[in-house]
Image 1 (cartoon, helix red, strand yellow):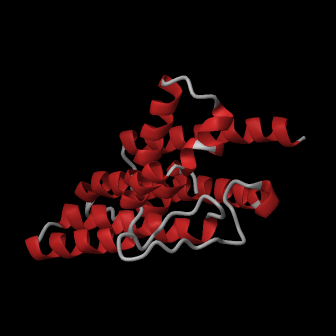
Image 2 (cartoon, helix red, strand yellow; image 1 turned 120 degrees about the horizontal axis):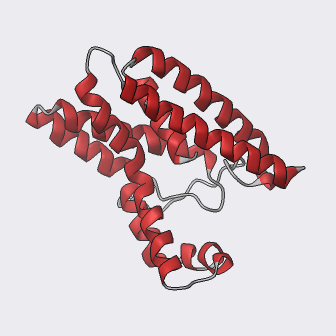
Length: 189
């Protein structure tokens, strides 16, 4: 899934109007597993690496994969949840629960680019028949479903968290998806 969709899904599943102080940690937890990917991409672009090399070779280097997998590890998220629970920290609980939601949603939606979601306990990767992005593995269908789900989720969240800031942020997510839809239509048609 794309990062904004993760944020919307985690807020739908974990966010509560009665607990607005958890919105930030939930959002951060939803984005955190993708943060290494952004760092990787920035590093490679600043190094002048061509796009096809970034995704065709660099992405698959063991050192980068290990970096990604630490942030996409269900056992490490569970350890974080345990420590947060023992310390009685609702914010840390929300953050690690959101990391776990991100990982669980990614697990069935990655094909060759899947993470080792059980790292460091296992090097196993689930190779899904479905990809959230690859058209050869239902990526176009999933992209449409993700966009629709995210836009509907934003509408639900706008009602749940009716502050002007929340509505502006959710409107920004919808605008990103609208731009993506426009781009996809140009590419696909």
